Length: 512
Ligand SMILES: Cc1ncc(C[n+]2csc(CCOP(=O)(O)OP(=O)(O)O)c2C)c(N)n1
Ligand code: SF4
View (tube, helix red, strand yellow):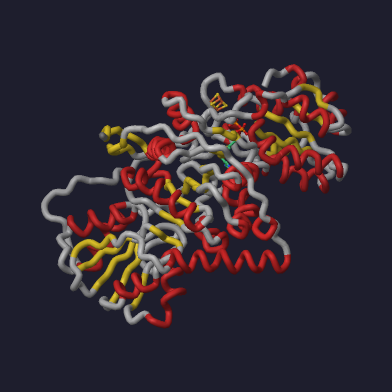
């Protein structure tokens, strides 16, 4: 028996994880995938199913712990946002070499359009480097079935499998037919030692790299779900991936172009099946690839099929590499190409609205902290280093906003060389433990005279709120790293301290 459930993109992953019998869940919070963890925790509680959760300090830790659990036979799920892949990239480059035992699924929240990120980095480029199969669902219900399929593939080939979830899919809701939940069988996890597999260096690393490439060759030889629409005889072909499929499909129907075009969706974006691509492209004169960001699929197709392609293949000539590709952009492209107009008065689907940036909530503790810093910096040429988190929200009180740990990190280089300007860096407790703590230790070792203010609100507020290690105790950890900690929430370095003392008791007395 199945039950129809209205689920958003985060919830559908959580439900699919539960039904696939996930044993181990590790993550680092980040929009748009930050609500998978609370959804799955809730489901695990309702169904009294044992899932071990690791609320990791950063993506590097999360990736390694998921691999460790998988080495012991557990089905693991690793979740992070796109920029998290930069942090996890070191281990992810080698987990393919070792291979895994229990299925390992990596869910990555992508953000074309930088809706909730400081950048729209196209992380597709990591995938051929990691050599992990990559899937991109086009709908919520497709996402549900894809999770189990991905686990099966991961276990069969003993490598992690990745699913990309873009912002729009994560925030979209749809009905999903969920099967009745049947509790998973209890298994005892066990790590079987295998030095050939798990110790990678020199010749062993090369051998395991070779094995990994062979696995990718096997996967690429299998055609994954052929999804073709419209006219087989058409001389113009359209290839798309992810949410662009819906835009292309709807535009073609709206403009009545069904007999002039054939549309192919690629769900397994890496590795592609060369024969499938050639079978499609070589019956056409021209193929246009509709995808957002850098044009990864276009590059992959051209790179793999270059010598055998008879059709002309286009993509980024017509669609920008920046921003999220919208339905209207795709519709306009087809209108221009086929000289078509929509009949009658059309509803305007894209309304121009002024950009509304976020801001601090009323009574936000960060307001008081910045007020205190302003007071401390009165009369001096001061610089405020900013980190990502709620403190980076408009009205942008800090002087830069880049990525996690850029507050203390960039300040460090400045404080190292500036003579007449004072640098105070800021950042949340989440960012501090993500990597700021190491920057602090490094500053101490290098005798860099800086002031770092940890805006400690005991949570990773911006993405949730999600759990933060400060629940455990910021002061205990920082006392070891910094020569002097004035309060749990404020770290002051010798030398700089003198400057602050002269400025009165503001910082010491402010409750952050
Ligand atoms: C590498 C990376 N991982 C995750 C995120 C998502 N993210 C944005 S801000 C933030 C941390 C916010 O927590 P904190 O530093 O405690 O500041 P708060 O929002 O609580 O003020 C996170 C995890 C990110 N931007 N970059
Ligand atoms: S959620 Fe963010 S902006 Fe709102 S009060 Fe908390 S820290 Fe401030």
